[in-house]
Structures are given as C-alpha cells and as structure tokens.
Length: 395
Ligand SMILES: *Cc1c(COP(=O)(O)O)cnc(C)c1O
Image 1: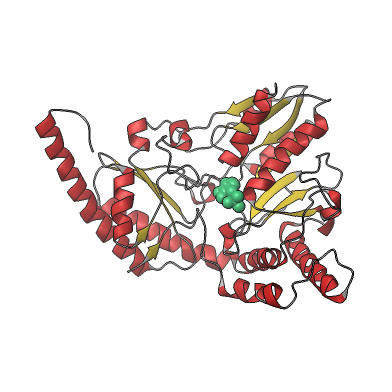
Image 2 (image 1 turned 45 degrees about the vertical axis):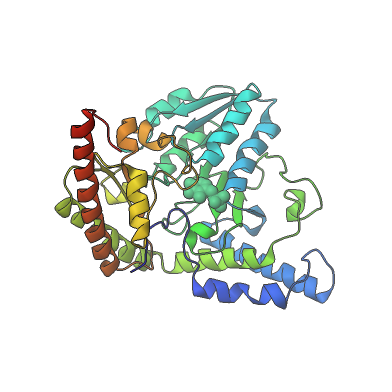
C-alpha cells in the first residue's frame, strides 16, 4: 500500500486543476504582455484566476499579485514593507514558530540593523495577545504572524491580531500558506494588509503563489524588470501555474466544509488508533478543533529516532515528515518543537502526519499497523543497545 500522509509539505494535484492548466502549455502559450490575440487570451486566463482568488479571500482583483510561491510572497511582504517604511521605523514583530521564509527574511533585516521581536508561543504553539500588544512600539512597522503552523497545526488568533494591528496603525502580514484551502479567509473582516498563499499546498501546482497586498499599503516592488503585475513584480507570467492556482483555490473554497469533515475524520481516527496501539507517545499542538488544522497530527514517539522511523515507514510506502520538509536534511531539531518546550531528544523523536482529501481510513489502519511494529522493533533495539553500551542513548 502507498500512503501519502505528508500533505503539509505538498499535495497531490487535483485532476480538475491539471486539466484546466493543460491548454496553457501547448495551445495558449502566448506571452500575456503581447498584444496579439494569443497574448490577450493568456492575459485573460491570468485575470480570471486573479478574479477567482480575489473572490475567495474577499479582496479586489487589483490587490492580488502572482509570485513564484509562498516563499517569495513572504519575502516580498517583509522586505517590501521594510524598504518602503524604513524612514518611519525599523522594528518588526513576528513569532518564534514562523516558516523559514519569514524567519530568514527577518534575520536578514536584523543583519541590516533592524530590530525584530520574536514572540514566544505557549505549549501548544499560540502567541499571547497581551504580549503582542505590549511589544508594539512607535517604530514598529509590521506584524507578521502565520495563520496556521505547518508542523503542529496551531491556528493563531488572526482576527484579534488584525484588530490590534489596525488599531495601532501597524501593517499586518500573515503567512496563510497552511490555512488557505482549509480555513475560510476574509482579508477585510480580519484587517489583513498582506497575505501569502501557495498553490501546491492546496492541490494546485508548485512554483506559484499569491501575495495579497491591500490597496494603499506601502510595500516596495519585488522583482525589477518589466511592467508585469502593475509594475510590482516583474517577469513573464507563468500562465499554466496561475490558472492552476486559481482553480485550486476555487475548488478548495467550494468544497471546504466537506473536505474538512472528511480529512478530520481520517486524522481523528489516526490519533485514536495511535493512542490505543502505541505506548509512550505525546501528541503535540492544540487539541481543540478550532485551534488546529484538521489534517495535522504531530506525535513524539519517545525513545525512537524520528529519522530512522521516517526511513522505515518510507520502506513500507508511507510518506510522513520529521520536522518540516524545508528543514529536514539538516540535523537541527525543529525550532517549532523547541519553541513549545520540547527537549532536543523529544524533538528528534517526533513525526508529523498531515492528512489530506485523498486519504482513506484503510490507509490509516495500514499506517498505524506498520508504525506499531516498527516502533516496537526500534525500541527493543534501543533497550538492547543501552544494555550493551551501558549508555543512556539511543541509535
Ligand atoms: C510551504 C510553506 C511556505 C513556502 O511555500 P512555497 O510555495 O513552498 O515556497 C511558507 N509558509 C508556510 C507556512 C508553508 O507551509
């Protein structure tokens, strides 16, 4: 059996999205800046996608900019606002559990003399609003808080953050890459000034994203070049990907409550079975439904090396993740798990299973059966290793 339980890393494209993209590879391949008919058709396709996206998040078409993905949208929002407002102040507030696209943009600004406040999070990965309010200063120009966390699925109090930011006249950016498609987004209701989305996290194509920039928000252009995207983001538009992005968000919004109900039942069944069948596990992140993404399950399997477990699951056809996909390959324990108070050992014994709309209960059964057997085997060899070496370590 093959089980893809890594939907927070990327998702299997929806067939309908793929079908909608196809004509824009081989038939309507014109440059959307060209004035001839094929160029105009390409531009019309991009503008239809723009309309779908604007409608999905309650924005205007003129507030939607296409980018190369969530990473670029995050980089643009943070460095663009920083550049545009550096005369006003050089302080930014973010959190300690952001995606590296946000964290590393902030670190780069720090090297240029900016001050960044990294708000801590509680034991389930949520910020404290009083602490947020207290950290706003006269020279604060931006608050960037992710809507939902990619590792532990925690959902931040976006509405309250938006209200606080707007009340203090500070721009509010949110990385909504994990939230989009799973939580209804209304940029007006939530007082959001800038918002990042990525196509491939919502059953769309990779390499395309959106930055929503509220009309009037001061944020410098990102790519320098031609006049594409109202002169704000140069470069020939990736029409097939943009068409796919629009369709993906459209379907995600149309089917959100049905998809979420299905995904949640699969995820909850997984949690129940892990708890019943495997000893010495800790469930990380919020337990309340309204505070957690419906597909996310994050478990620490004590005395098991997460990377070894991941590799063994892979051999059985099961795709999961240790830490975040973007940080794995490094031996650093997850900054998110450390931020919620996990020890380095615990962080290294942790796996994320992110369930999606194509998963089934049978896949959960297979996954937990394999997980149970592999963990028993690994723990047994750990005990053996400890006995032989007399060391309190595991392999
Ligand atoms: C995946 C992800 C990103 C990066 O998006 P890409 O399109 O892969 O560049 C940013 N933020 C979060 C929370 C993500 O999960």
